Image (cartoon, rainbow over all chains, first blue to last red; front, top):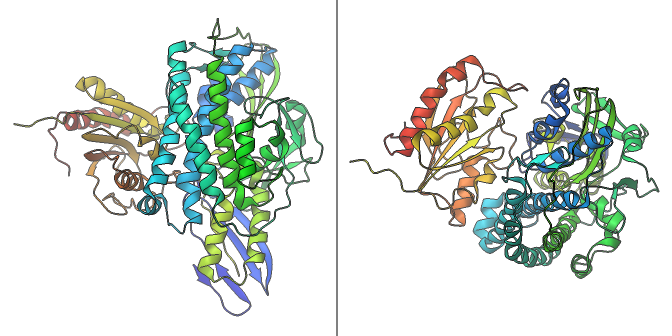
Length: 434
Length: 162
């Protein structure tokens, strides 16, 4: 939608498709200068935190899993980590490995979904995945096959692919049978091959020449790529405990949005997600993923947000490979869960959701009743940076016609795979340029 | 003689922590239990998760809470057809959905890769309360038995769409 004339121009995007949730983004350009960028969220704020207050601490993983249909395991894992932190419990290595395997399944299905069905159409001139399927059926079938394997991993470990039911504070209700885990090997080998083909495919896309100036924040987990554990770190030397990070990452309300916007120390915007994880952890990728990254032309840091699809594909290779490593070493945890007794206090859990760092922090009382709850999803942490990206994209694309500029802005948002239903239940993204 | 479809998948879309949005999974579960046949899938938060779940079905019944301005508890049954909106009233963009690709889009995608069920029928139950929390509103709760009967009839091949 375009309004105005002369030096003032308004491009309005009523909603952005292929973004989880609905929202609107408004960009104003006046006399060739971008004067305003505002990501608007129309839906009332999320009340999941309020819903959690008064519930038993053991209910948090299942309740918070319902926040997002794409990344329920992330919510379960961060909730478990926070509750175990509050109760002073450390789970054993077998439980940790099984959690990591489950989480790999979620990364695989989520990354395959985003790359093939939501993001790739942008680069190939397709309106959506249906058009892409008509243009390149083989690619879409490959993406769907990878996604199915991710779902299979989640169903095998978590009991079902959507909103897994086998996760509990302390571990799992039941340890999967070794034969069921071993049966994942063949599909995962195929998925890893398909993921390598994915890297080759997306690295051949044409990328706008945009360089973002990012403050990256991701977990670091000594010796391995972070998924279900680690310490929050940044590209500027931050290295803190999860609890200290919860204090540092200050969320604020802004007038145009009902989601919270996070800043470090109340001041600095930052970016979480694949670009940040890769920038802080590329050196610990397994050889197959590191070689794929190198072949795709990625250096140790990727500053072009449009190439996030390549980084996501490299992480897809990593997740398939990591799942294979974990299943080869699988030994059922016995017992499948540590005993967790409530004690009064605070607990913080941070894990790497497919879209970025997901923080949960709770206070529970002596009976295990939740007193306060705070959930900081990756999208609300990335929102200010997405706005900054949009400013750069608009400034670099003022010579584009409205339709192309609008398309480019939508792409810029999808680069970060925002899951607005995590940040608020719905988001309508609209862009206005004047 | 009415011949029931050989392979039936009944999918419940919705979120049981958004009150009436949880009606779909509840109805799907009860209908399959009552019919004694068919596979139940759900709760699904995203229609894309139907891919892979309904591929081999002769009939897929998708049960979902809807928001169309009718009285809460009103039932609507629609068989999806080819086209951008799939024949769903107002379904061209899934205006009240959080999902990246709506149900009609997912069916078009499934058909494009030859993984679509033979038929897809949507049973919609009008919701009145989509706020955070568990439990259905009284109006929707009262309509659950009728919705279950309608889905059972579809499983048994006895209900034409209207």
